[in-house]
Length: 371
Ligand code: ATP
Ligand code: MN
Ligand code: MN
Image 1 (spheres, protein in one colour):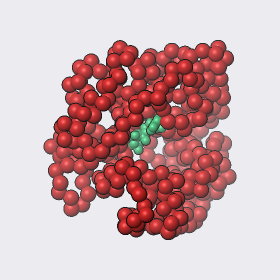
Image 2: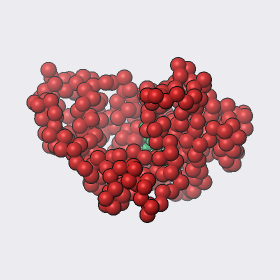
Image 3: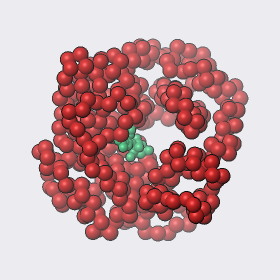
Image 4: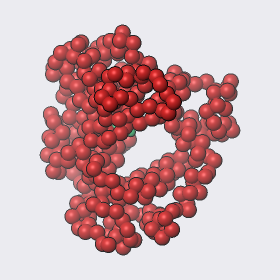
C-alpha cells in the first residue's frame, strides 16, 4: 500500500511544523521503538540523535495511515538512515534487535527507572548509577545519598504520580483550581494547558496558566492561591519559583529554554468523590484519594498568548514552530515574546491566532499540535 504524502511533504519542504491530531492512533509499536532509541541517545548525551528520532516519530505519527511497507516511507522528510533501518527491521521481523538490546541494557534500565522519579533528571540518575545503585531500595538505603525536597516528595508519592492522570481527573482539578483562584480574584483568567488542552485522554500532570485582566494585578496572586490550597489541606508538595522575567530581553534562541514566569510545581490531593466516574487506582489500593502533579504558571497578561502557546505544547510542535520562525521568517519567539529580526522589533500578540498570523501560517488548533 502506497500512501499519498504529497500534501504532507509539500508543507514539510517549506519547513512548517508537523501537525498531529490527537485522534491519530497508528501502529504505536513503531513510535515506541523510536522513543526507546531517542531516550537512549538522551542518556548518552547525544542530543542531535535524540531529536532526530523524536522528529522521525512525529512524522510517522502524522501520517494518515500505518506504514505497512518500506516503500510507503519513500520521500518522507526527517527519516534518517537509522530510522529507515528500524522501520525495515520491524516490517520484516516484527521487532528491532537494536531496540531490544537497549531495553535489556542495565544502564538504560537504571536510568529509565531513576528518571521516572519526580525531581530526578538524567544527571542525578547517572550519578546514582555510577555509584553502583540499581534500585529504589538501594538508593533509599544508601546513607551517603542526600535527597532534596522535590526528590523526597517524588519517592513518597511515586505510586500515585507515576500513574497516568485521566481527563476526568484533570477536569476535577480544574474545578478545584478555578474555585480557589476565583475565590481570591473573581475576574482572574484561568486556562487548562499542556496535553489536556491538546485533547489528550491521559497525561502525566495537569498544567494551568493563570493571569489577570489588568497588567500587574497578577503580582502576589500565586502565593495566595498556594496558601488557600494549603488551608484546604490538599497541598502535598509545593515548589514556588518567583518571576525572573525581563521584558527587554530578546526571545531565547535555545528551543529548550525554560521560561522566567512565576510558577509552582505542586502535588495535590484529589478525592474520589470529586471525580466523575471515580479515581484511577492501583490494584489493591482502597484510599479515598490520590496524589496528582499540577503546574501553575503566571505570565503577565501581555505575555499570555506566547505563554499559552508554549505551555500547550507539544514540546516537539513548539520546538519545530520556533525553528520555522527563525529559519524561514527571521523571527524569534519563546514563551515570553515574538521578535522580528528584520524589523528589529517585538510583535504584539494578544491571542495565539496573532502568533500564527505574524508567522504567515494557518492557525493550528491545539488538538493538531500533538507532534
Ligand atoms: P503530559 O501529558 O506528559 O504532561 P504535556 O505536553 O502536558 O504532556 P508537560 O511536561 O506538562 O507535557 O509540558 C507542557 C508544555 O509546557 C510543554 O510544551 C513543555 O515544553 C512546556 N514546559 C514544561 N515545563 C516548562 C518550563 N519549566 N518552562 C517552560 N516551558 C515548559
Ligand atoms: Mn502536562
Ligand atoms: Mn507540566
